Amino acid sequence: MLKRKNLWMSMLLVLMVLTYGLQTPVLAAEVKQGTITVLGLDSTPVVPEKTLQLAEKETATEALIDAVGKDNLEYTDTSYGPMLTDINGVKAGENQFWAFFINGISAQVGPDSYVLQNGDKITYRLTDFTKPAQSTVLLKVVDDKKNTVAELSSIEVIGSPNAFQLLQTALGFDQVGFEETNYGKMITSLKGIKAEGSNYWAFYVDGKMATVGAEGYQLENGNQLSFQLESFEPAPGDGGNGETTPTTPSTPTTPSTPTTPSTPTTPSTPTTPTTGTVTAQDLQTAVNTSSAYVLKNEVGEWQVIALKQAGKEIPKNYLSDVKAIVKEKQGKFSRITDTERYALGILAAGGNPTNVVGYNLIEAIYNGNVTKQGLNGVAYALVALDSANFTIPSTAQWTKAKLISYLTERQNSDGGWAWDESTTSDIDTTAMILTALAPFKDQDGVKEKVKAAVEYLSTQYKASKIDNSSTAAQVMIALSALGIDANSGDFSKDNSGLVQYLLSFQNKDGGFDWQGGDESDPFTTSQGIQALVAYQMFTLSKGSLYHFTLTADTHAAETPATETPVVSTTKTTQPATAVVETKTNTQTGHALPNTATNMYNLLALGLLLLISGSYIYMRQRKHNA
Image 1 (cartoon, rainbow, N blue to C red):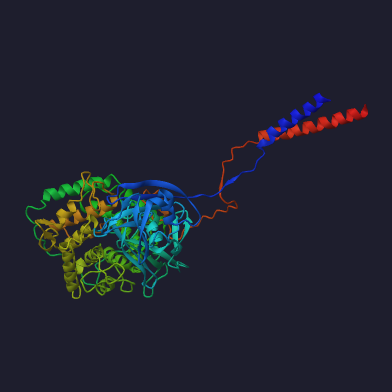
Image 2: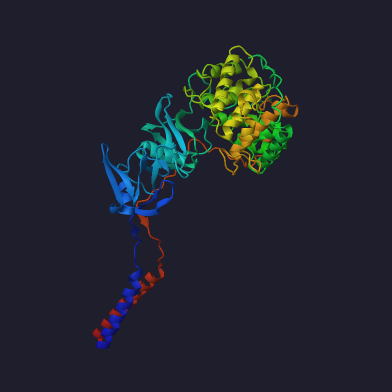
């Protein structure tokens, strides 16, 4: 009997061990984490970056206490409440204070008021308020009526934050609505203003619509960022929804000399560049090296324009690639500036923008909503329509005369223009508009506007407001189009001129950097090379950078049916209306890895059946005995 009992106990023990693996997945409780760093006056670490597990509704002050201990903090009572004066024995002296940053952005609230979010990077830095910040940006939010909803200037940034983090920190996390999409974060509301129906929040950097989303744009010193509520629907008086769907012509439009306005005036004969500043050989070398840099990287429309006018070879696949893009989009782009730059790029590459695989991009411009992207869209519409002898019907929504009037009527009293038509002029927009108006500079109503704008640019140059290569490039392009030497006269000082200033940003690899340093980037270089080529054309009396001749080959009809699609290597903007990826998950927290196997569970079940059968058999045998 004892042996039988021991046998049963042994079998039961084995069963318990084997069935130990019968478990259900366990969820780990969600843990919020953040980091905190304390920097001294010279940004040396007082407290190196420390990772903290955050309590529910933990404030930045509480996180600091967790990181260094309450006894290592000192406060001074002020009329505004306690002010932090000492961290880990480092005291704030005269004219100093402890600045508070959220994800690299100067906080707009105190640390007592800010509740940390998961993943936040908090920085306390001892700061001398008598010294200017090393890096600042401006943020502006504009509604669909062009009313400024929020405007914050001189926001200090440290590290490498992005524009989306700027929005959240400057406006408040609860003031920025967004959805996660296949293309990243899509902003759905700002300051309670929702993007509904055909509206969307457009993102601009320094007056130009950004080519990436806010989350993908890394802030740079001096950036002027704007988020503007715009619509795909046509504005009153405009044609189309930004980019009118072009008609498919049976035969390409035959270019002819426009009648209105009158034939553009020929730029006056330029003066010889200042002797001893930039020689023709030095200029050619700069063009050659920048061209070499461009050809080693992705070549877009602006690069193609510069290469064409410099007499360089354009990549053979460019034209076929861009035709494939136009065909894929059916000639309709969400941004008018895309239509304009594609038209210019195709023209520079020897194509015909009036018939790109059957689509007329020129018509899409003159019947499009060119005002949707501010004055940039209007200026480049005029540049594109005047880039060759295109026929523009008098019934067009936007003739060249209408575009000229629209631009000249919006000049500010200081002689400049602002991309958003505000009273705060900016150098880049003013230069772009001057480039567009240059062929018409001698017309009544334009001449005095051009003169005032040139004086505005000269004033900005002499006041050292042109502080980066991209802005210098835009001004050089404009002056060259006007027949004004950008390296002498009103655009020279201290025995140097604007051309020499731009060349100071060119690196050994031929590319340009934005504001100093030795790391070139393709976007900045695309503007630098255009400026060099424009200035070279000025010195050789070859006319405007953006003017081309339609050749006989260009007129050849193209039929969409015979066009073989080409896989594009050019980066294209993702659709404005993104599909939101929805994921359903009924569990909360983070599931632990499921590393179990069913083998032991099945073995235990089989053993249980064996034991049950044995028990029944023995009972039956005893009963029979």
